[in-house]
Amino acid sequence: MSVTALELTLFRTGGVDIAQGAFAPWLPATEREVLMPSPVWSALVRTAQGNVLFDTGLHPVHIERPEATFGPQPRMRIVMREEDRILAQLALLGLGPSDIAIVVNSHLHFDHAGNNGAFPDATFVVQREHLAYAKGRPNFPAQYWDRPELRYHQVDGEAEVAPGVRVVPTPGHAPGHQSLVVDLPETGRVVLCGDAAFTRDNLERGVVPQPDPAAGAASLARIRELVSGDLDRAFPSHDQGSWERWRHGPEAYR
Image 1 (cartoon, rainbow, N blue to C red):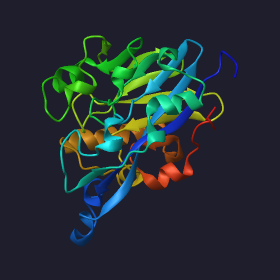
Image 2: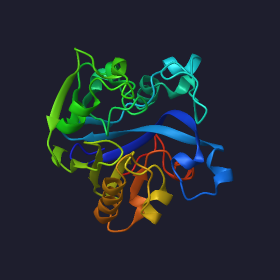
Image 3: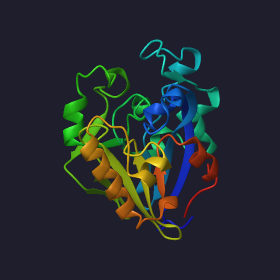
Image 4: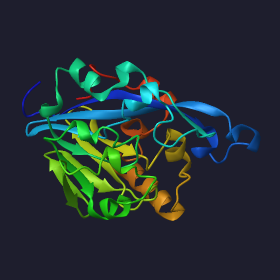
């Protein structure tokens, strides 16, 4: 790859069987509690200024103990394999922890920041509002991200991470949630949505179940605007059908 080019690689870092209604409230009541498989994934963006990692996935403690973080949950079951370890996935791409210069967390939930501690040399880019919101909240387990050895670079609003790579606030799922915009030389602009959009259906319908529904709807509209309505260039967080269609490492988007 040319040192001036951008390249995006997606790879699996776990999975969750989750009640369908958590993502699709429009389903009939009889279908909402049915568990469906949902991927947990991270992304590597190779840039001329270093490697950027988007989200760090589930911690490998969940391989042997799926209930390690929150105990038994009737609407959610962690499914994680040995090969889902983020360091194993990066090794397949020829990289180790010290090769990651920047980590962008969409937010600090355990399936998006579970391996932050694996990258002590990186700078973590988060929204200032989100870091303040997450601290001390039990649904943002501190053991995965609130660690003294980690450096958090707090930003306010849109910010460039590297040339052609920027964070854009997409709140609704949590205050200060952010998505990553990457302007690829061949594919064009893509948006890594994080939990602003769980599925493509959320983007198509303009509806997503979020703690702040109005902010969530506005964030969906912002993502659609960023990709000029081409939803093939928007990557939602937990859509199994979309995941099966996307390229996965070592294949890349350029």
